[in-house]
Length: 253
Image (cartoon, rainbow, N blue to C red; front, side):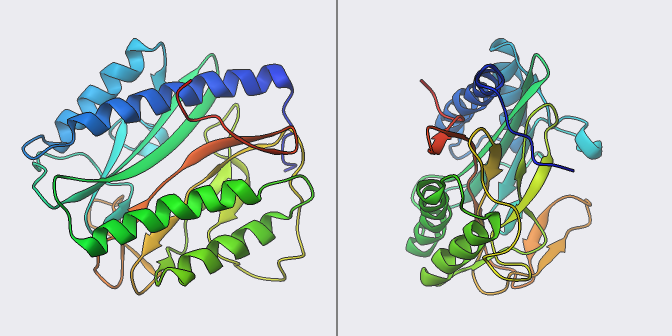
């Protein structure tokens, strides 16, 4: 399937959906304090997103049972909200999708609960910094494989490794579209494969492990951890290639 090139009016629709995600994540970040349960975070996220005129697109997607992925400590992505209460020193990833008028938005953050360990600060910074590093690289003519290669190199330069088997993706009239964008060079040369073009819209989402990038899925069939059993982190933005650079759609005005 060809990678879609969006018209300005379509990018505006994607921006609207993505901004709803950004506003909701910013709201949820203020609530992530010791004592709140993951289910309470999910409920608040769903209600807040709906108040913005958006539908929480993750709920029911591929059978996912909630609106917000709440990934605590060793869970890197796709954590299901439970009655677990956040504790001082936890780190929690929040991943959220929206749909407005048939167009989708998607973003994620990882945050610390109260005072966290220095290693966890470094882990979170790696995911966030890798994301913005990649966004700054984007320009028409750059190959997606080059982008993946550079993300992997950045992550490893921080002493961490990317999670394998999961990736960034295109987004538009569906929550997941072409292309797949791994955070590592999966095969072939960085100078091979499709090039980024003006008008393309996609999600970048570095997922960081400490020692081993091989994933393991827990018994709930959703929560993804590393085989090293250590904590991970995750950051994501929806971006559009506009004016020969990447514009972040998933941020508040």
